[in-house]
Length: 392
Image (spheres, rainbow, N blue to C red):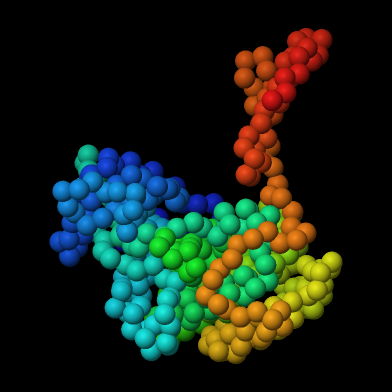
């Protein structure tokens, strides 16, 4: 039976879920096809689940070069169950290979599904899923590059994402949570990008019939607030145009560093209304985002094309590709298959994170700067004020 807990986006409070227990390296898991898998070291945590290096079961321990990862969550949690439904229906290796062949693609950025099942440990039941191991996420690269990507790179990434979105849309799903932290470079091929985390993926067209538009106040603002679509802000389930609208916001952020509403993410109605205004006047929105730079005409054309789509419309993927390819020609570039991550002239350094806390009689300020480590400033107080100032 599916779990009752419902996956929640960042626009609303998440359902209460159990935390996953950490398994020791060498734990053996058996999937529904009776294939056994061996866990390696944990390498990450997503929500309430853990991610482990993994390999096919053998006498050898799982090494750092393991080709698979296994995602594990308590059985009653919702996100992995939702994600698993997508992978089982749309990410089996033969399905991906067949679509790549018919569309003449060498690579498609959808992680392959290798198996899943339930695992009992300590009287508790866990759900697990085996997929391809991937590399670094794009958010880390974005921060390293000073929160701006070169125009050529943005167009290359967007062309790859169009392939991915067309594939998942053709298989009756939408992703609904596209963002840099959900995009990962290939582990063996860092020039390929993969879309991950299908916890909010939605089957918009069961049996090929797109669902009708319907607003549900309980679903308002689902997704990641700065990127989520206007449909989601209004409580409607995601559709194909929703994914493409989210891609538009990603492209703009990657090119200019931030979206106009990022200072007020705690006010979802403000964010929603700002996005509605951006769709009503795309040219004005682009001027606001690129006031000190040349406006990338291809992004404006892309946004205009997306905003013209109806809720149930099939996007013109080939036309959207041609718009992005035209952008490459404007800057006298071509998609050579190489993703080059480099700081852009004028890019700003990632903002430092500042936190304060009390340690004994010291008031401490901890400053964390990406790429430069952490420093601590300490103030020691007495009743008459500051006595000591301690610098790093």
